[in-house]
Image (cartoon, rainbow, N blue to C red):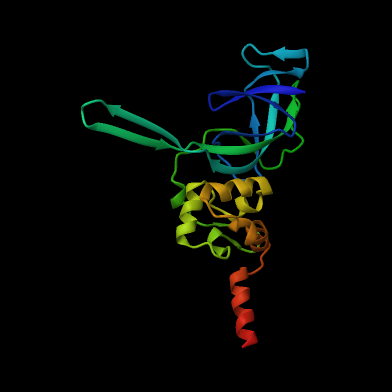
Length: 219
């Protein structure tokens, strides 16, 4: 079964387990969102076309992470006027995995943590405070990862990565794309960022501190 949904002013043809990148929606990695603007749903030739929406149809998806698209440059030059201008833009994106395509007013099975899809607020990510996990007052701060200082933190925030939760939810492909975007030369894989993020969220101390303690004990 497939469906055609509308979000961010664009239409997408989706099926269960499809992974796609759409214009940014509010939410964190792991959140479930709903797309109620379903324009077509069906299986092959047996499809229902909405007018403009299909009544009772709903598509649910899981947020995999927040990121930014490649930079697009706009260049303008006025001949013989000694005037030229260049502007750059990087679109904020949300990567989602389609979970279910529902019809006839059926309710989603993954109701926990469900949120309606809506445009994200245009708030600067750099000013977002460090989040705390519910269990054990664990500080969800990306600088706890070994080697991530203020400069690298700023780059990550520019790419839409502001928490350990987002890093822990990344698969190998998403992490490789982030590494290439920030030109880290494979550092994320060598330093096991995903594993470090999972350990920190589980309450383990940062690896850097553990290594320093081990070095002192060996002296």
